[in-house]
Picture (spheres, helix red, strand yellow):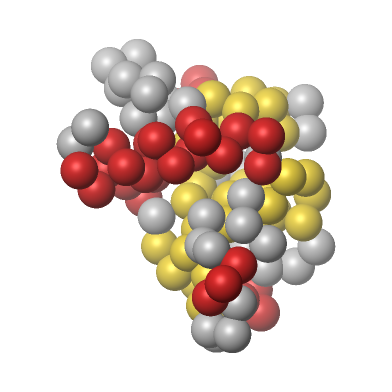
Length: 104
């Protein structure tokens, strides 16, 4: 579901990006892929990145930074059980994606 958070399906990337957030509209649920954005450990993030582009969210006791410029489709079957929802932060996530798309 849109804005649900999942454990990163790539074990080798989990130290840097422990989770991904599904940003794809649920209206596209019949597709075999979902568009996801990695959530990075904030200690690895540059201080030069604007928070409007890369907002920070609490996920399972961690402060994780959304990296919208790293969005990528992955097979839906790779997303197992969701760990939480970021739906309450939908406006910040959409604004970050808009910044990538339109520079606003």
